[in-house]
Image (cartoon, rainbow, N blue to C red; front, side, top):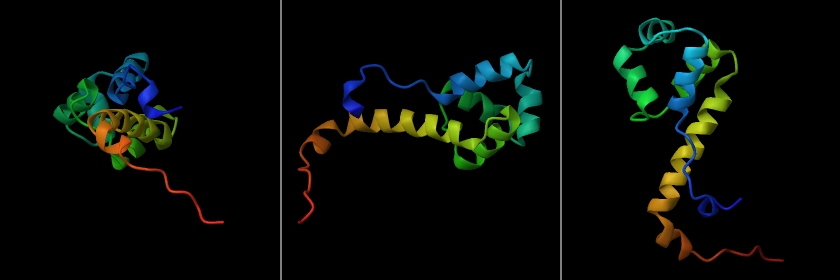
Length: 101
């Protein structure tokens, strides 16, 4: 699927994390402690104001039991959608290269 064909941005993984923590009955402070991060950092991620970095994806994936790939892929999809929108004109001006035969 073309990145431009989707009108609605992918959900920030922080929103999914907030739901996961709620389902595990984990409040912010205990979750931040388990993740080895500050309450402020976790709040920024949950609000969508900060990305899930590779180290944080490793921690969250361990805490949630679903591994880091899910979290880092969600973040990548979110970031790519926003960048593609920002760079749309530049990207559309690039011609596709064809491999030599």
